[in-house]
Image (cartoon, rainbow, N blue to C red; front, side, top):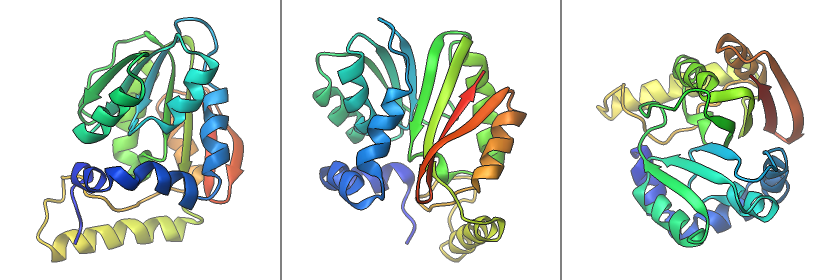
Length: 216
């Protein structure tokens, strides 16, 4: 049975960090690598989309302990763990969907998202990325580390299977349930470009997980 997104992660909170770091290919490298791409200047303002327990922030705060981070996540339990982990840091948790939250325009030096956005279709991502583009400063950028579909056929299969499961289980087609629907990396780049990002590059990959750098 499909689970609502926030319920899925809340139920797995105790094992979340261990699972992500030990069972996801390349995680021990891609979390610190992602952090290394974020701004190093004192007081940098960072927006973290789907921050969870802040695995990327563990590495980032070692590099820039003075950064101000706004972390958005659907799971209140995840955010409670985040606050306990970084009780001495300047971090603002926001318990909401990043699709629904308003972002201050031209405010953030950078945004980051790790292993969160592979649950959503291109149409929702375009809305989010357009809003995100407006939220970044003139030299701001977005670091996205996520896993991607290996082909267009596989991408289509994920979405058709999700639609089938929702229909069989009588679920609201407009609600978010935990089921992976990654785009291809090429499609993801296209969506970022459509949202206004002028320069989008593949920085590194670990199997199907890629880090993209999208400059405003």
